[in-house]
Structure formats: structure tokens, C-alpha cells
Image (cartoon, rainbow, N blue to C red; front, top):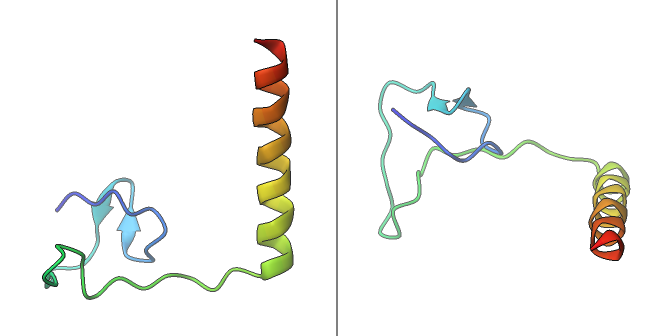
Length: 60
């Protein structure tokens, strides 16, 4: 089964690794589990990406 939620621990290479899933009323997978991401690491990565986008805007 195809899966676009690359934050879910069951997604691998665009596919769901589970044999069966259930969807809630919104169409989201009820088995989805998000990994714990350290807040400091996440903030650092967000700032790096923000700098890249701002630099791109300045060039254009």
C-alpha cells in the first residue's frame, strides 16, 4: 500500500509496511506512529531550512 506520510514509523520508501490498516473518518491511518524528535534538534533543523529559503528569496 502506498504511503506519503514519511513521518510515520511504518512508512518505507513511499510504502506502508503494515499488512492491514484502518482509516479514521478523516481518512488518516489509525496505526500511524510518529517518532519522538528532540525539540532542540528540531528547532536547529528548522532554522537551517529557514536560512536556505531566505537565501533563495534574496537571490531571486
